[in-house]
Length: 145
Image (cartoon, rainbow, N blue to C red):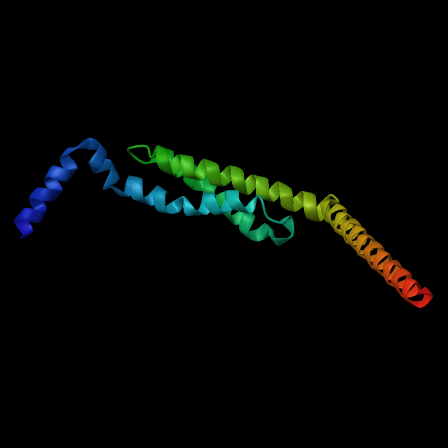
């Protein structure tokens, strides 16, 4: 049984593409791609939930391992791409954090939410006023009959 597995592994590893797919140079970056995918998805969320500490840590992590992926032999371009995407996403998140908390983004966001809430209250009030007028007119019509 061990000889059969060894023979299968040797045959599998003899093909360059399959050898690469069976290596940690492939599966490491593939499993690591969850971080940049989550970071790209987070760029669509409210900037209030961004953690400055985590964003800073992930920026330095990606920058460090971007360099590491080119220092190993053979160069790991898939890992490099993973960290380039993550680095760019974290820089974007950092910009959004600074813009929101330090350059007036929060005030603008709260102002926009307040205006939309006011508009909603006005429209609901107008609907209630219209319904009330209709009820009064219906009552008048009943009384005059």
